[in-house]
Length: 379
Image (cartoon, rainbow, N blue to C red; front, top):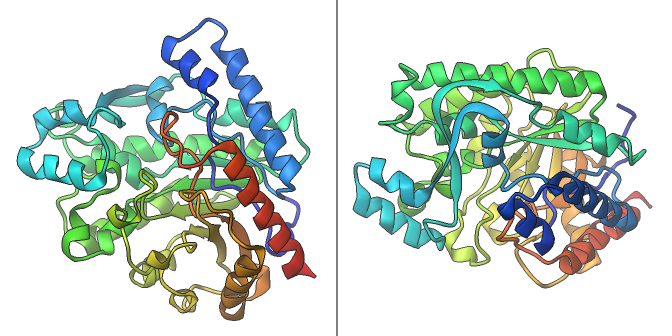
């Protein structure tokens, strides 16, 4: 990978999907692939027009950031949270959780493991190759992380019929993701990012500890430290020996609602010691809201690790002020150094295909702010 500039700009991953794409995917029209191609190119054009240093495909071919695997992997099936209610022991608590999350149970679908996992096509390699043919800019490819997939895919009463333990399922998940990551590295991907949003939930105490990200938590029975050790091990296994691309991990606090009060809050302090043990070079973190804490929390990151600084909020209509983003970035540069910081939104602009956090107009405005801020910071 060619060197990226200080304060390199990128998206976290997703771009708002046009209504015609959502409708075509729902109806499974014969020319869906062509429509997806057009929408990927439109998302690319928006990023290039804004001036981003690193581009993605906008995750236009996905229904959400991780359940899309069901269409590409044998052994996984798509289930709504309403369907999962039949397998939850404490149904009342689960329904209370859904109310707190401000999400209808039928609106979210998750990938549940019902058999051994085998890829029947590439997970994202073909998507990367398509984008590579249409841009000369560095490309970021995003994948759901191994802890997220293992945790969300394990449902007692379904998954335990195919796997004796959650660790056995994790072995399949690691093999699946590692094969794809090695192929992406060989194909020339510039940045490979895994998404592990559930890590923040593990370290927050009190009421928020029950607010699991998209309810990907039916399998988490161990103590937080045990779960974090499990997650670190899985992440290190999928990235072991990967060279060439910038390896990255995105950790947020939820991106399913514009109501900040229902999203997870707390500093990254408690996660930094675990980050330090991960074979990941960049941590893409959420810092555009007061919920995230201060730059001081990252002072103990190893010197060879980088920060993808969440500097604009994808869940608000307001376009941030360039000066405020510059000031925020300088706070982190004072702690980490300017050569260790990239700029990005807090999270994706469209976690769910049919539930975007922002319109494309707002998303363009926010990307423009990031690019202008980067120019000033480099100057």
